[in-house]
Length: 586
Image (cartoon, rainbow, N blue to C red; front, top):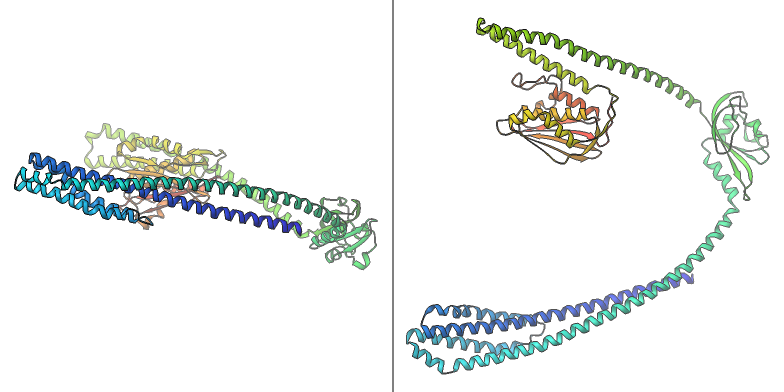
């Protein structure tokens, strides 16, 4: 208790010293700022006085030039001085009034009428030079009234300068004194706080050692009750299962209700009996070992055979010896039945997976074979039709020539349809190819190279933001971007096509966008365009209506989704998501 009071007292003194140091430091800083501000005001007042004298000198210079020459151009310095002198006097008054105690006001009051008289004398001589000539003007100058005014002005300005210099000297001394006071306060305060911190550290260390001794005493006292506490905690923590405790001689001490139900022994009948008699394990038994869990077949008192999961733990004594054992076991009949069902389901799933993989392989082989077999007759039809067009063009009428052209175009569309169907089939193909880290910017460069002809023909501009690196198959990602960019180039407007590819993080996914300035898509068609063979423009544009369906299939293989946002005539933006860490979904 005394140590705690000492620690609190030391902390209180330290806080008090810190507060006092802060107060003295603030007061010193405030004094320093006040003196510095006064010095700045004094310097500004001196500069203003110098500016006033310069303006008066300029006025005299302009007057002399005009009196001697009569040329109005020599009055430019005079006119500038006439405009500047009232502002100089007002500025000096404002500067002096900004002090807490104005010092130069009496001198300014004496200076202002002298300046007015001087300027009046200059104006009068200039007017006489204009109206009555040089002799009349020189008569005013020779009266020495202007010289007397100027001498008194210079005397007052000299007084101001002297008073200002004395004030600046006094203010510099105050700044030095304030700085010394601040340094002294900071040094003394820091030293006092440091000493108190040292004292507090010593006090805390002493208290820590005392507390450590108390903790060790507490630990020794807790060891005397560890045996009873361990027995109680082990029994209570196992209460949800069957629990049997036995003493050092192997005699049963306690059975909880679940253990009584499973073994068929009551607490009264089992107490004091050998553990092996109450906890009767059949041929599947593996004797309980401390700290392990195993399965066994429990033979109840009434002859029931119950599959169980069991574990055993020793009950340690205060001296480190074993004073007994606790057995924990549970009925796993339902679990075993569930495991059997699960095994059967797993076997059935494996058979179905094998059948699905075999069927998928056969479908892929069929798709490749069908595409090859369909191309052969198409090539024959196209070749012979074009041969007829080439050799018999002169013998055919216009209608026959158009029919042959229709046949060629239909065969070309059929070939494109076969290629697109094969791509769509590949998009859903289950493959063992591993996925890798794929920089999407490299994928975009490859796609731009593949579409170079279309880009140059349409004079399109393809741009992109920084794109991420994702896990995936490069072929899939190239096909996805190529289909989207090719669509943007195909369904363009008359102005220069522009396509922009961007990506940003969206939770655990990357959200990609492919935006164009093309024809746009009416909202009522923005879902059906991702279906097979869905075309919005008929035969106006080449294609089979499979490209976007292929994109949808590829994105969904990576657990993502794809959609479009657009209005007719205002371009379209296709969005799709890909997980930051992708796994291809079979």
